[in-house]
Image 1 (cartoon, rainbow, N blue to C red):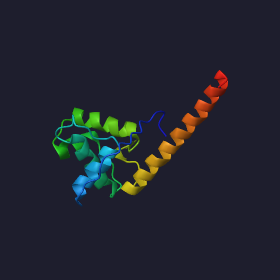
Image 2: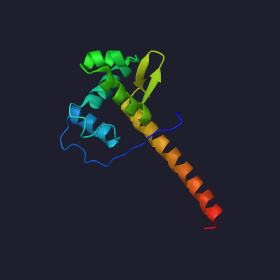
Image 3: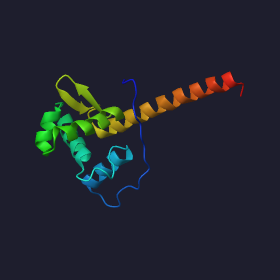
Image 4: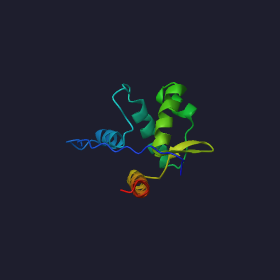
Length: 134
């Protein structure tokens, strides 16, 4: 596991109608991956491309992502850093790939990370309270 990881969960209303694109947008937004500043949905598009190639167990380089999506390499690298920081994407020798093979496993892994982090926070809070005599 990485030294630090940003875990973000945002409680957003689910899409009212079944629409795979909206559901994927909701999932990523709920994980704090996408924001309003990303006007052309670059991060979402990168996320989708990584989902597609995960089925093939094939990592993508930042250059491949930039070419496929018509984005600058700088934009791709910027969004990859966010996805890496979240722990959702991992680097490999040959590029980047989703941490696990499907979205349900991905959410399960985020849940485990969150529980592990909360457990560490509780432990540290107890030690601090004891140190302060509280």
